[in-house]
Image (cartoon, rainbow, N blue to C red; front, side, top):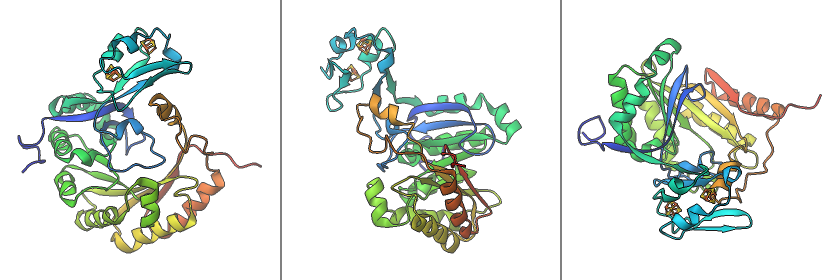
Length: 325
Ligand code: SF4
Ligand code: SF4
């Protein structure tokens, strides 16, 4: 069957980053692999470089010496320089990397590469000792790892064969068949429930949540919590998902529809630190770039609402404003 680590699964996979020694993406010390491509377009996306399947180029203003070597080198004539700096026409750019090689000051960087799955497994296996000692493992993140379900299933199966615990972070916007290919090879599923109202979900992410909720129920109906764990994650974003109706609505969904299978629910306070990425990708009009941090009392309030889910562990994390007094 394709996707179970058989030779028919793709031999390469598109990634845009690998973080070793991560402590944010599951228990213990982990290596997080960021896979390319995502079907959603969340207004608050923290990894815009992971949305498209193709590589993307970012320009670092502070490193640029203005030599115009990139402008001359680009075979597609996709780069112009004006008084504000370098601009890449994303429609013309073929992501060939010629400008990156031509730049004398490493002011241009490519995000995205195809790697052999076996090489990726060998790379993450280097830290197996850390995983074993800390109760950690590897986490498949993105982008959306299930956008490359067959290759990611092959990667996860290879990790399991080497005795490495596995986790996946998913938005759930995929087919049930894709979930079924990956599920046998994961120990922990971290599943995003962002917004409970389908119309708001579509307005915020470009897609309604009907399939996402159905897929979440499907997972909950199939996992045995002794061998696989299900965590829910909710980005708490001012002006979007940070409402009483949403947090209480997700709490009801978890309590009524997920059969007591959720071990933990994480509320993730939004921050606008990704603003620099948007500017480096010529997306300087990120709608959330000036959004203020949530206050501690607001996160405490949402945490209180989330307790109605009856999930054993409800946590919140992220950068917040300390309340006055
Ligand atoms: S990656 Fe290639 S096509 Fe794109 S801007 Fe650089 S040189 Fe031009
Ligand atoms: S080649 Fe590098 S340093 Fe020169 S203008 Fe382009 S980005 Fe700036």
